[in-house]
Image (cartoon, rainbow over all chains, first blue to last red; front, side):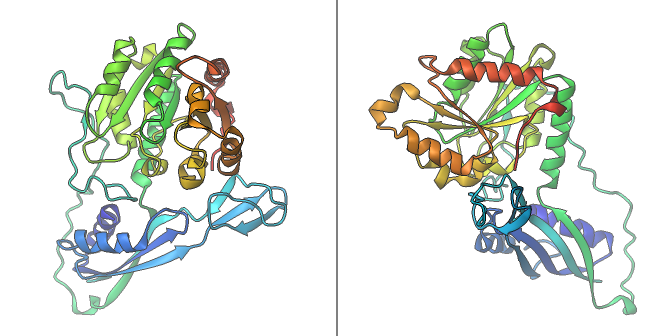
Length: 108
Length: 274
């Protein structure tokens, strides 16, 4: 969370912002990040920054794997990655591990 | 701070090696852009919210440093292993025996991570292995920057294999690329067959899975077939080895694998990764 704030503040300051109104994060369902913990950490570390009091918006990205046999994507909710059609395990997790800062909304 | 558990929030107490003397480390450039931000008086027409699109990974700093490590290690013709497991799976003994049994075939150096003490480093040093200890304080994993600093304390030009013994933890180290060629996860016969199912991200991220403490399998009532089935389910792309570092059983296949990996140019190594 401190890394997200560092990036957000750097971008906001470069743009001449007075404060950050909103942080938008993108979280994959398989990123291992617990949303509640992230929100708690945000409250703790944002206090003395431009983001004090800002809204934390979290966009969830569902997991998706590629099945080479079926040449198709399938949704995955865990790391077992078994294709629902052919039951082969997939070695290619295409989405779901995101931990990104998408955007910040600032007030000048 | 770790993205999983918030470790190291108190931070700043990572120690690398025994500092022989104070010297300036070359730190990864953390350049704050110093273009003096002219503090414009807020213009009236500038008021109102504005959205800045960033789309950047929060792990990008570690990812960047890990790639830098990887390039550096390849230039040094090193095969680099990141050895991960729960505490007590036998990482140190496994690494010590790997180094000893490789003998003159490949020269092994080790970077060891623990929260505290240099006991593991001392064990390896006693066996004549070049080693640097990282004590992470409150941090539950190694990251690429720690590895880069620790590696600078080893004579890499006289090594063929660099083994990084990560902090004993099956959760957080899964997310930190260190610049390794192979991630090697250990599963000991004494800790239960279902570890891969309980900690899937780690087992899923591994290129190699090693079942250790084969000599204790019978005493521990280890269900080998079940363990292999669980590994197959989660680490389906990984090479699997079964061995006992203590008795040496099964070590040959593992050592031959390392020799073959080291002989293969990095670009041609087939290391399935997810």
